Image 1 (cartoon, helix red, strand yellow):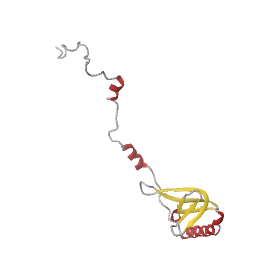
Image 2: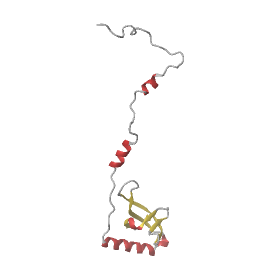
Image 3: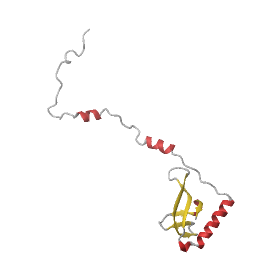
Image 4: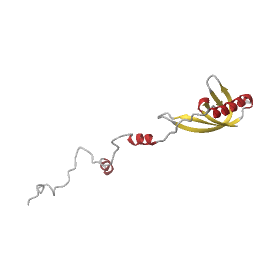
Length: 133
């Protein structure tokens, strides 16, 4: 049986006189894997990320929290040190997480319904579930 490439199989490799030869690294890069769906892995990771639901406080817990806020209003000039646990909504999906921050209380704004710490942290009163004095 005759090989159809027998007439060219032993010829020397062609070297172009006008185009420079490609480096081995550049040749290898042509065959490296690539991400056909850019951002797909990030989308999967974001979907898999868990978020918690906001807890609705009962009447008793609301009363305790209200008493703590009243006490804080009475000593606000002392800038008391407190730890506040509150809900932070997630920016990308439903739900969020609970965060606890510590600092000195600067003021409570009834109109905006926020408390402001001396470091500039602003906490919405509607998101607070606990205050430790």
